[in-house]
Length: 248
Image (tube, rainbow, N blue to C red; front, side, top):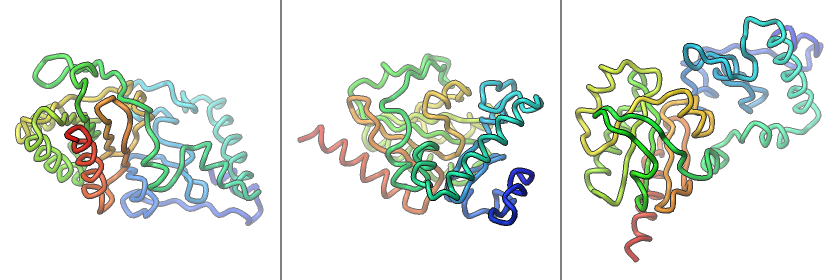
């Protein structure tokens, strides 16, 4: 990246940040690296380099050890920097899927994807299980402290609304024993361990927590990446509204 930036003779500055101390990483809920930004647009993610999971080879710049992958990345990065310098930030945001809360709320799959997972109880976890219900899907990880708060809140919601609301918690890159320990505290939630294919089906999930809300028809109603302070309030308002619609 620095080699590409150096080509611009001082017009572009290269900044390296620890994601644990980065405001941009906090804004996007980034908890894995590398994540590459041009301005405030997230242009490359861990999965692009094949660093999402062991054996992952479907990223744009994989296999990363191949010099041809390096060349593809440097060409893409230079092109995106040129877009930014040329005043085309809107085009860059559109190409990379948006970079603010409003864009994130509208991102993700158009409808609830097929899950094709086994849950922690040993049974199948399928999209058909949730037909006619409001569905919340939370991607989380055992090493993510903000996830615990959201999972506790979702467990309370699931217990309160019964069959009207389905809550699915999908653990990413987590030890199964730790996942089972957390799951024991919320029996109203359906628990499973996500695969890379699951994350891709939901729109290339790279951050935890990532929360999706789907209406009773399976359409996407809300998406949030990371753990903003108002997450529970915003997501809760959407969930309650969807539940109330069915009652009217």
